[in-house]
Length: 173
Image 1: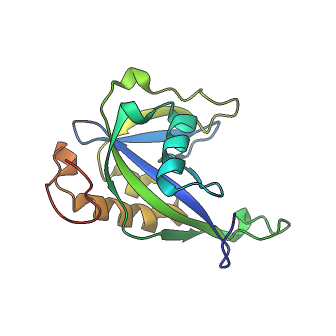
Image 2 (image 1 turned 60 degrees about the vertical axis):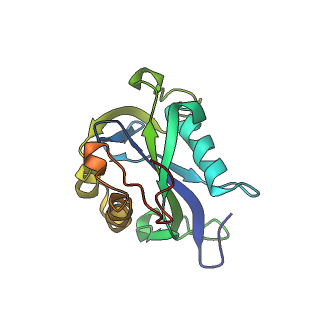
Image 3 (image 1 turned 45 degrees about the vertical axis):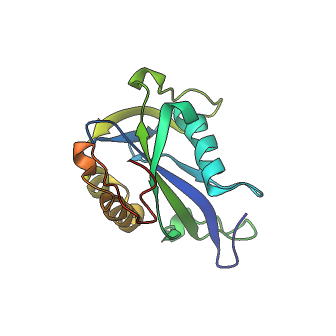
């Protein structure tokens, strides 16, 4: 499902632990790392897609996480021209994403990158909160910076503490 502007609706997932670190996942068979993300199916809400992608990509279910926040708006990035599939219709020029900040409430042992016959990732690690902004592929960097800045408004994410606030993005503490 691609919108009239050529963007595919998608969810992005930032998972943090109690120490304020975030999960950083290595793309299967590659040297690139990113946060889990995936498309929203027709008839599926962003939250439903997030839980589906969470299980498909990292093996976690609802009981393993707590939603702390979601982005106010859709955030977009364009794909580099070399990655656009010009022979498919409609042409997808990028992603528009709704992002979720989740806290892992179960243990690391619940994380399983092999729940699918075609896994997205083959490794993961905990990294400091801002590390992904510097390390993600360049065409996603602005979205990552905006996501992490917006989620930072919820409180001291790096210390694992979240503000009690009425801001729309801060859903719970």
